[in-house]
Image 1 (cartoon, one colour):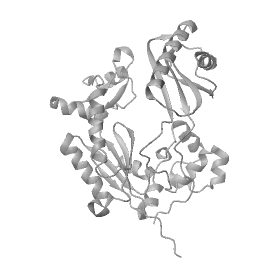
Image 2 (image 1 turned 180 degrees about the vertical axis):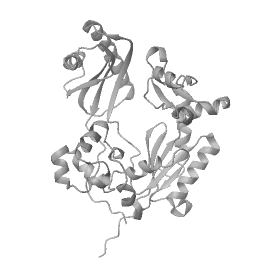
Image 3 (image 1 turned 90 degrees about the vertical axis):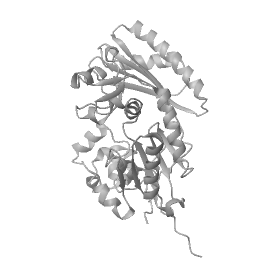
Image 4 (image 1 turned 90 degrees about the horizontal axis):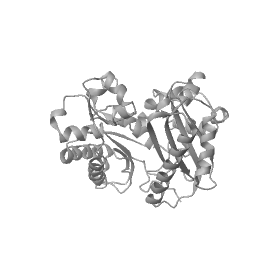
Length: 357
């Protein structure tokens, strides 16, 4: 008896272009040629959620402080967040995705993975489906979207940013290794600034550099994450598109209008934040098992620290213990406080070999 070969996966990653800012420009066409950002009040330590491409020419980017953004770009049109509107638009775009496949995994309001492996639309062409979706979003919402098409989530997501804005990048199976070899390591899922520095210290700057090392060697250096590095550096990512994506964590945070130095005042803020967190947790109606609790602080000099402990119970004293641990590391005044929990399930890179053909 012969075994039927596994069908080739066809994954699309759709990423809306400067989503919040684009919606604001659509609502007010006079903003079209101006640098526009959406974010918090610069006088209250707000940060940018997003900005359009005209603003990015001044060096602006998401998560930048609004005050600093205004200094870099004095002509910036800074608009408050209108989350109700953004969610409404996102829901309509998500509905477009589901016209093409039931396998849609939203990552946020402005991006999602789609698995169209079994779709017969457009003669089964993932490229044509992606183009159709982009056209339909423009026709219905007057918003542009960029798309990446490839054999897995990792490659599709990187590809979607390759020709932004309003671009389509297709990486077929035969081009996966050529594409991956040129990628800097910070494109790998889970590689942030700290890990990128650790890799660079070992002379590893690209995925091609990573391929010189065995899985065992990478795990010896980086623990379990070495497995993810090993497989993604070879273009392998077997994570399925999960339409019922489970939440990995839940957290709340606040940035103070004025830095807080006194422990007593910080404890009061922690109590308030804990109460807010419990309200959010109850509203989400989650039934997942909690793995750990965590707390993070950002200090006056913008340096940050965090502490985590295994879950025992959700109580203010347990978070207060983590606060004490973090405060011992830095005596500076505190500008941001955040708390949260992680859950026991996780979306991991599958270590089995992905059949690309």
